[in-house]
Image (tube, rainbow, N blue to C red):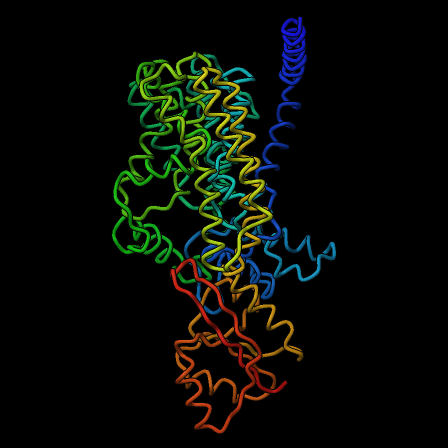
Length: 569
């Protein structure tokens, strides 16, 4: 009798779940609302409390801040240095959000990093919703929803949603263009594309160029060239109205490119193309060098929790490579991926615009029951679903204990729950309940976001060197102090303390800075303190040691001990 009652309860539960799922699937708006809620659960924890992450994020934010300070919305500068690496798009978006924040009365808006991150958050949300839209060209509503959910819970997009950089916005633009290209290819012969498809494609292309230059042209161009070679014809591209769309793109992007050419005398193009872009292709940027295969290995962490399911789906893509939807997905992924693997300069986020295609193929394979414990080595490989949260739980605990002599007590319960949810997902996979495994892994991802970004980083106090130094400057006891730094030169310190922060090279230079009159503060890293003290003694100067800040520089891999010395208080 008890077994019969339990069976009835289980049947009713599944019946209600099925009804809710069916009701959601009847409306694109409902599915998109669920995707937004899932995305926010993964993107928002720690969004305001995470300190500026050196080095790229505060460089972008500081350049945007200087646009507000100077009123120059054409040139891009970091302090006195021209920042001619990327186009203007992301800086305009950041200055716009900060200006709105100031108008709404946000205190210290210009040094509130969360405001500069809003374009990335919106870009990440757009990337998820555009993945749903793009996937509808390949899959039904449920499949498109799952593909978008894989993007929402993807670790790499979680990271980029929290960083004031170009990559989340670029991903959204790339997905928009590839969704339009997919409709042109898969619907060839059906006549004219809907106007909204054309608008999404061409606006995405123009915005992508303004955000990160020609990179978006590579994604679209390589895919289109591969498919054109397969078809032995480019006529299918005519449905995208290239003449009108190309004209729109030129009208959108040309004014700023002309303005910056006139403003910089051509220096922008020499730096952006000659050094930044060609430097990545050549060997100039050796500090980001990695061997071929780097992205393949990184994929298992950056596309978690869907990575191992995607790996299991690879044979499906090969078997069905002549099916048009799979053909398009391969053309989206493979040419650009190979280019990235061959280029010496490698960073994990470069391949982010390719992940939606991987998610789409993975969902195709899952929907056809290809992915499951019956595949060779799948049961063992699926342990990776649990390995990432377990590894992060241990890693954060070890880091907190090693650097700060404590444990992340606030984060540990949530991280353990994330690990248990991931282990449950693996157990469901082993029992051939793949869809339930997918949903459990989404739950693990949400918990991991809270545990790592929302709580774990709060306890890693040693990594928050710049915010602590900036707090020293704010509490100095005098108005508008002149500030300099010796030994510690991270861009986040410039962003948090002010554009006028002086970067010094030696102890005597730091001592001379303090002689300049008025209220002054200099941060001196310990390895420079002996020569700094010696020069002060020679000058008969006795600066006040305000405090010491100890920490760890994750970029250099060195422990730090910085003294804050002040005069004129």
